[in-house]
Length: 256
Length: 282
Image (tube, each protein chain N blue to C red):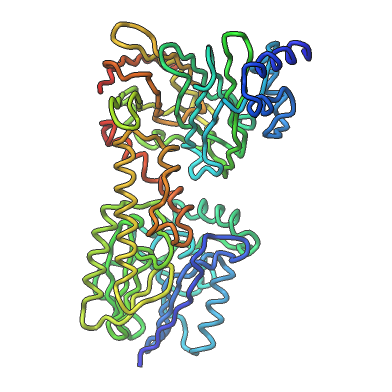
């Protein structure tokens, strides 16, 4: 494994300013997590890996509400992003989501349930097969994945399941931004008597059918998920489609 | 001569250094006994309070009142388990439902100071209106906004308005159960109480007492700015991380615990502002 890693790092470093190249690291997890080698085995096995400061994972260092920890992944400084996998080393369910940017840049905001203090990481696979890893520690007091969803306390969600609201911004400092909220309990299956029930796929496409991004979501994504995407230009409405693990499908148009 | 006393807490967050002594509690020495207003964050605080009360009067404790269901205001109840403890109905329900989770959280933040503290739910229900206790006639004003039920106590004989956590002085307000619109309406009512002829002293839930309504204006200014910031951020397309990163305006940045309370409040209040901006039903 050592040989291809080194090649990847040298090749990357040659393309970067010296300061950035110095920050690239092949080994030695910058977040010093005891779970890192396990994570690498589970998600990135057999492929070259570098810790890359160009992969930005933004989250509060202390989570006020472990059920709704905001996370923003910005890998737009990298060219040729094919896939991004987001995981949290110490969460009972480690994998949070995967996204595959197509016509939209490699940028996604969402919220996540965290059970305990953990690194939250994004591993970004570029077209050359290299995984670029970034991340940040989030301290939290717990209860994120084993606490019941708010929906568990009321029947309202049954009437509103998969109800989508959203907006796009075509001007101002956030021009090109798309934000979407969808009503879903996102039950983890870790609460006694409540089986796992979560959205597992969301596609964003323009009206011509060109796909902006595909997102695979898993149990740790927060209840009533909210996603933030950044289009290169807010050019017409976007159609969001998807389904949960029980086969409930949705389709919604997000206007400007 | 009415005798009213208060224990003024620090304008800090809970730490293992301050042991949770961050809250104001009070007691009134009434003709037939002592009326205690809020019991503090722990058994130990309640016990110390009781010893301090015994140094100024030999009268028995007649009643303990909890102004609302936040843990720094009721977790000392245990030290008063032998006397009646009263609160508004919704406050009693809130303590019964959330008390243990709140206590756990304080054990985590204040540490050893919490030793032995257990939730003691108030056994008596208070209603708004005139309330005669221990030979003293109090006015109970039932408001809400900081939590679902916030009791304001007016003692006309001393001119003291016990505002509970509807008012913060020199400390950023906390919002975990806040309804800002209701809170602002409650502040208008409190403001009116301070304009009454008998008014002498306003005791906030946190921060120094005053002889005027200045802390009400300060609390209102913070809440107005906070809710406008959430609304404008959501309307402009900001997400929660963008909103967390906004700088505090200079008039609030110097307020104790402003940065940490702002971060918390984004978590509490931004999701509703976001739902409105995205056109989601609430």
